[in-house]
Each structure stands twice: as structure tokens, then as C-alpha cells.
Length: 185
Image (cartoon, rainbow, N blue to C red; front, side):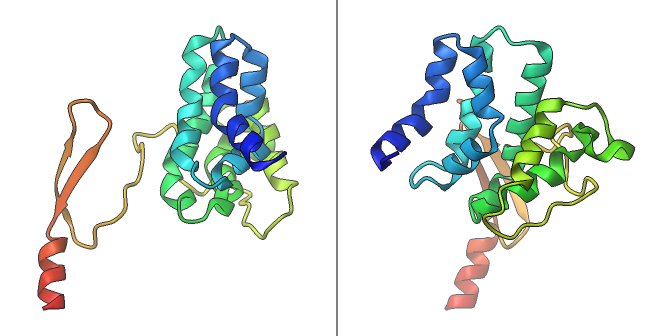
């Protein structure tokens, strides 16, 4: 697939499948490891557009298990965003470390088994394109906890946070700039 066609596919396929009420295509796409990895790796796309692909489930008449499966994957990608922005090849490790408890692959820690999450993890395991760590027990914060996202950037304690009225931006304040000026003058 040429670059233009691949960009068109990665930017609009999930949206078009949802808007056209093609639940099967939408669901299969968003539970396919190769699609997730391709979208993360494609120049100019990345983590946030991938997270937003999962928002279209509301347009479809999906089963509660399908909705929960997609929510767990979306929340996992959101929790992993700060890692995936730096190194998208960490996707298999992030999926395994956060979603393992939702499969039968680790029965002693299992919360509930979602077969399509197990299939996604097996796909991630079977694509040997680069080295990765695939834990055999859940090791990372799972998507069903109060933590929504990790923001990075400050080197000092954050002393204020505000969310814009539209809910699209978070602005944080810290003494970082004072430390930077003192250390660089």
C-alpha cells in the first residue's frame, strides 16, 4: 500500500466503518494488533488519533462485551501514551502488562476473560519484529483503575493544574521555570 493510501486508511477507516454502521469491520480493526502498531508508527499520526478511533463505538449497536473490550484497549493505550509517544515499539509490552488480567492467559490474576483481548495479546506476541518484554503476570497499572493518563514534562513538583472549560487541555504549573532560570544564569 502506498503512503497516501495507507494514511487515508489509517486516518479514516475506523471512523467510516462506525458511521456506516459496520460494527464487524470497526471492531475487528480496533482489536487488530497490526492496525494499532501501524497507526502508532505512521508519521503524523500516533497515540492520540489512535485513542480517538475508539470513541466511535457510541455510534454502533455493539454488545456490552464488545464495548467493554474496546474501552479496555482504549484505556490501556491512554495509560501508555507517555511511553508510546517516545517509543511506539513498546506497544506489545504495554498491552501485555496492562491487559493480561483480562484474559485466561494468567488465570490466577484474572478479573474476567475477554477472548478478543486474549487474541490481541497473542497477535502482539507473534509479531517478532523487535525485542520486547512480555510479562507473564500483570505488572502495569490496569485500565480499570482511577488513573486515566500520565502527563510528563515537569522536573519539579506540580503545584497547580487546571482543565480548560472545553475539557480538551490540561495546564499545569510548577517551579520548573524558576529552577531553569537559576541554573542557567
